[in-house]
Length: 145
Image 1 (cartoon, one colour):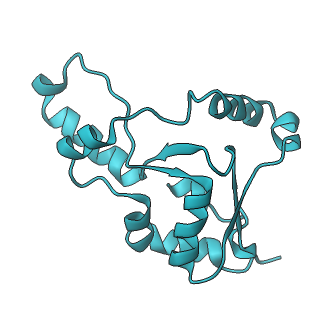
Image 2 (cartoon, one colour):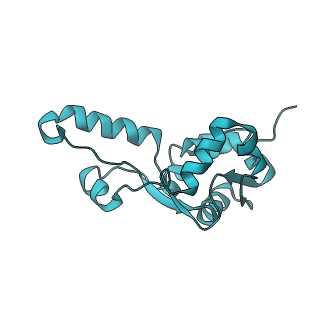
Image 3 (cartoon, one colour):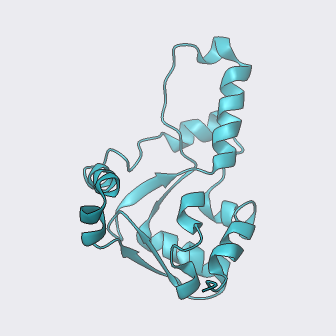
C-alpha cells in the first residue's frame, strides 16, 4: 500500500500510475500487516510449520484505487497505466510489468481465509484513513523544486 502513495508518484498532480490496466485487480498489503503476520507466524511455529501461503490485505483495480484515493484526498485523482516506454527503458521495471501482465504479481491470496486468521488486516480505504493518512498527505503536497 505504501508504494501506491510514494512521494513523487504524481498524486500531487492528481494522478496515480501503476503497472496494470485500469480494470485489472491486483492485491496489496500494508507494511504493518506484513509485520503482524510474520509476528503471528513466529509466535505460533507449531501452527505454521511447513505451511506456505500468499498474503494480502485487499484486492483493488486501478479505477477503484483512484476512487478511494479521491475520497481520501478530497480532490480528484485519476488512474493511468504506466506508459509502455517506461518498462522498456528500465529492465527491472520491465520484468515487473511482465509479471503483472501475466498475473503472477497480481496476487492470489485467499483474503477471506487470511482475515479469519489475521483479523486486523487492513483494507486499502481503512489504511488510507489510518496509518496511510500521513503518507497520503505527504504525497499530495506540492513537489518542492
